Image (cartoon, rainbow, N blue to C red):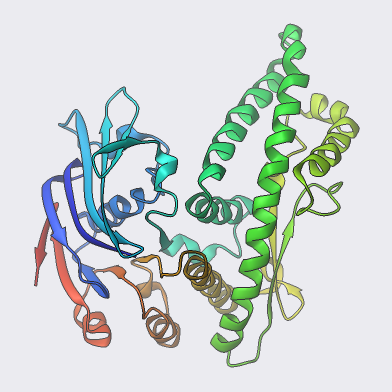
Length: 368
């Protein structure tokens, strides 16, 4: 899996730029606020037409532009594919693959990427939303139907929340509450099965990586947590649905009193422990960073096992946040696939990796 060439037009701070990447390590250097992360964002968009930085397509379009395009030639499964993304103000995004219009979900599996940014170093210590986002981003790339379920869930959640929040002033809204509760429970049941399966694979892949990373001193465990009435998160969706509905019925009055949704997949989390202790509460900063690195590298291994080839690895200025030992561990584990590394200074990284070097300044990309 690799991006051979990408052309940007009207995208963020890029007017018209084209770059061809090497098959291994590509170092993208330059001062801050020049467009390095924008370039990685464009590559990540190829995995499902969704940004890791914004929910709004309009933010991808340059200030003086009415539209933006991302055009890329990718090698996937030994086949050359051309992906084109078109973003227009006030209109839905358009996706084409080899010239044929496709839904965004068609990109799942066609192009995969694992992103590691400085924010991910706080994955362990952050709230549950960060860990749900990890699962959702990965599963959406591997399972074409998941992104659609997630989108439906978010819409139902927003509508139910609005009803619960406003029902005191507008009691008539309650007539629709049961319908949205039922839809939310059905989506939750399907999401829980996907997440539980992914979490099990993540736990299995991350443990040996972390053991190696810590020199055999630490054992990492990852356990999926969901609605308390769900006895088996990998059971058939119909069984999980009934168990969620039971939880929902028991908490109906509490939801009305709080004005919040108290039942559903939006409460899910990954419980991460190191040597049997909850990492979020007891891990040192160094231990938390090591655990986060192990989890992201495990995500890369899951993609490899699923698709037969490594995903494109995007390291967004993450090495500058790591000490020398952790830098070396990461750099020693990224072989076998294409990697794009952004940094402010390229000399040391390019020397250590033998990578091809590009410099970004004011939205212009120059090869060295």
